Length: 74
Image 1 (tube, rainbow, N blue to C red):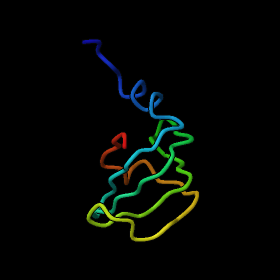
Image 2: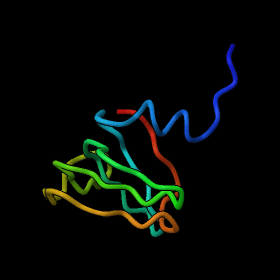
Image 3: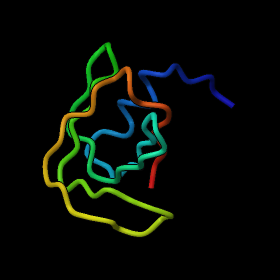
């Protein structure tokens, strides 16, 4: 298995749907269109999730990197 660095994983997630867990237990799902070295993320077509179900649609959102707990391909 090839070792992957964190930015390799982020780069492979660009323009794909991801689920992002945030501090406080909030989850967001959307298409990741951008990120930076601080792990700030821009999601388009973002939705806030609760218990795996869509709670509300958000649209385009910037998630601050220090609030991100995990990023998972969806």
